[in-house]
Figure 1: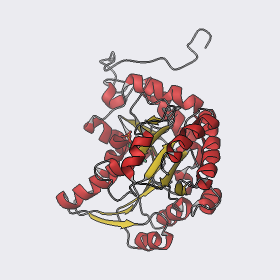
Figure 2: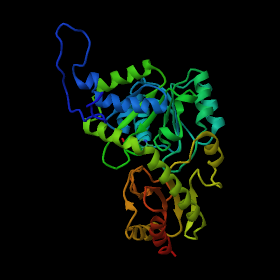
Figure 3: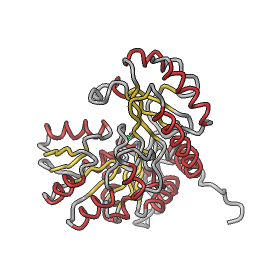
Figure 4: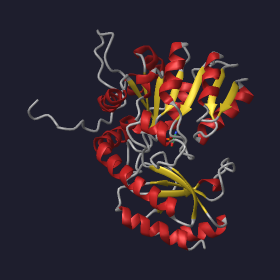
Length: 356
Ligand SMILES: *Cc1c(COP(=O)(O)O)cnc(C)c1O
């Protein structure tokens, strides 16, 4: 209406005025949410194609789904997977007797066979963090749906613009909104788009009881970030393609993992199942890790920082992190931001040339 704000205003509210004669309406924001959350959830819901539920972080969203499982549950998960998920699965295997089967992301026949075993949850992540492996999301999700198996897809790397798992029969499409959706390294958030309103209601109840709600400012920033996701992602993805090609040809690089490179093992599948390969890539360098760390400390444009999906490029030698010892020691995960590709390449060649 004329005079209304164009954008959803930041709504800082824990409780609302109640009509004592009514039985519905907003009472307390942990339960009924705010118009702020609803605007963010509605945008993600439209992009993913199902009702969305926001959370305090990606891990809060993931935990809400995993908390639906009973003791003794059977879960199938990928070998290359966000380390927080692997940590919860390991823990619940011990404390709750979960039967966790780990399968390589790319081993589609093994996933299909595992679905035949009627697991309680299929956890898929594609492209995977940090090895950029591509799962056959359409085949796995449709096969699971036909057999009534619940499939959750961590869609953080793809964003809702490059892959929509619900379309293929997934029950949940999960995002860390901290990454590309927020896009500016200034918020923590998570969101799950669901195949049905019953599934969304169940998660909302978990959110009410668990209390891991998205903050008002975070919802505001996430919505603001989402508005520029298409332009940020297009720019970053194009630059990632340029850098992947140049890295692939550089003598200081042993291997590049990026589904946008024609030689990549996931390239054909990504081209067939996704609208684009995304803006994160990994590469292994020559030389020893300590020398690599020294070279990385001289970067001037790319930030030595964890996380990904921001307008600023970030790089990380994942092997350094606790629990990431299985990652090759000189593997660098690069999240490509919106800087000029030649500036980024100059920074990268500075590192690579120092390794000889
Ligand atoms: C970062 C990340 C998460 C966890 O999200 P937080 O917002 O940090 O809690 C989950 N999955 C993937 C693939 C991620 O990159």
